[in-house]
Image 1 (spheres, rainbow, N blue to C red):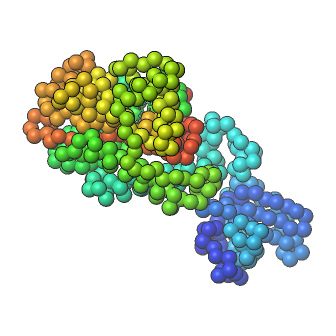
Image 2 (image 1 turned 180 degrees about the vertical axis):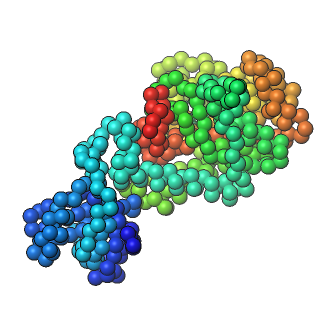
Image 3 (image 1 turned 180 degrees about the horizontal axis):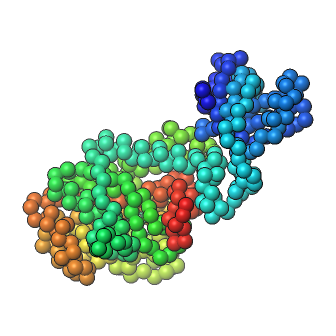
Amino acid sequence: KLRTHHTRDIEPEEMADKSVTLAGWVHEVRDLGGICFVVLRDREGMAQVTLVKKKVDSDFFNKAKKLMRESVISVTGTVKPEEKAPNGYEVLPDDITVLNESCTPLPLDTTGKVEAEMDTCLDSRYVDLRKPRTSAIFKIRHEVLKAVRDNFTREGFIETTTPKVVATATEGGTSLFPITYFDREAFLNQSPQLFKQILMSGGLEKVFEIGPIFRAEEHDTRRHLNEATSIDMESSFSDHFDIMETLENTIAHAYSQVKENASQQLEYLGIDLEVPETPFKRLTYSEAIDIINQYGKEELEWGDDLSTLSEHTLGEHVYNETGAHHYFIIDWPTEIKPFYAMPYEDNPEISKTFDMMHTRLELSSGAQRIHYYDMLKNRIENQGLDPDSFDFYLDAFRYGMPPHAGWGLGCERLLMTMLGLENIREVVLFPRDRRRLSP
Ligand code: ATP
Ligand code: AMO
């Protein structure tokens, strides 16, 4: 057997004098002359393998001293409780097998003593991921996705998968990546929007999808990706207020599950996670504009989209007033929201829409949708789009489409704000941005 235990599975007192086999990477070798420590690292943590020169065979001691950092090894030995060692034990080895030797020098330092540039880390993700801090991010990402699925399931949603190769745009604002689909032009989907709505006509009632979205954003920012993971939901017989509750619950559940199941990883990242309180504060768009204008940093008019600066001004204002990072901006002008957003019956200038914000940036947007065929077709035309290319979507509205609402939440933005990270690329294994296409 190459491994009997992970480093974290060993109980120092209970397992004292027992024989175990650990497997992993050589994190560090510390040769102090008479004693040599080999620090073995596996996915769960570290273990100290201790060789005392006087007590072991001299060939064995010399071989251990010369182990290359990041080589893959399997160590069989006995457990000895030791307060000064990581996890409170050390292993006195009988045998160390080198399963695969690492080349030298390494593309980057895995001990965290030398900080590498983001590009170096991303170019060599296979080594970067060996840093406990980096792998912690992806274990937390797993916990977040698991919690999101749990919460949807608990609320009666079913998981769906819709195509990523499509014929039309869905989100007006950003541009599309064209691709060749046999002899036709096609695109990578910007959002499952049209499909999740069609599923409402199909009677699935409550659906969610976690999948890639592609946006040909020209700019290179710390919060935009060209391939992102979107957490999408759609719910029939619901209005925008109903689904705002689902959104709050999803966020709160993700935070609490991470806190509960990833305490070790939060510790690696130095984070004391606070679970946000629900319900989140709700501001109308008009109130938001007034608040932003009070600060005099810029002059916004009703109908303007919020700039990055205004999002920051507002986020800080809300945080200072309430101590909360998450809040909603509701009731946006119909004109600056996508064609599928439902206007208020008594005031069609404003729509049944919301953005869910974090102090630093937008995390999610959603709306009650237009479920009337004629109204939807008009809105598509008014936004300068060609209704013919939306036939496959519009048809679903002619044969019994229920009222419905939904939202999209950026998985990476949720994670970067949860973990207080500056750059969205840190929470993606292999990010796609303006410059980066491999690995
Ligand atoms: P969405 O997910 O809807 O795209 P977002 O937060 O990315 O949300 P955008 O609509 O792309 O929002 O832009 C929001 C604001 O951020 C816009 O008002 C825009 O001025 C600003 N913005 C977008 N890209 C950049 C950029 N590269 N540099 C500075 N500001 C930007
Ligand atoms: P929207 O375009 O606001 O709405 O996108 C929803 C959320 O997805 C995330 N997101 C991104 N994250 C990183 N990089 C990007 N380039 C990027 N683009 C979007 C953000 C954003 O808030 N169809 C609607 C949702 C709906 O109404 O159901 C939509 O796509 O966190």
